[in-house]
Length: 92
View (spheres, helix red, strand yellow):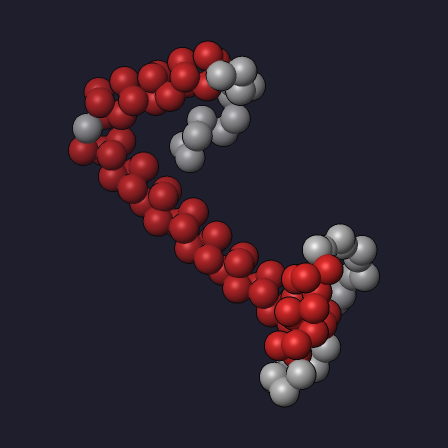
């Protein structure tokens, strides 16, 4: 897979911990360790997104009226707290 060099800023204590874990680990470098961590986080996020979408689809199918009421209440709360509207309808 193609790679792209980027610059990130991380707290020095976290860098020290990563460097410690890289020693004696399968990760060949700090970059490899961070790439593994990012891959794990992406997998976790994608899995959570799939689960959430499944739950939303199920709620819409089983209780369409309640779903619309809940969505309207969430949108009203967003407006009260200053969040912009029309943000992909919160897991829609």
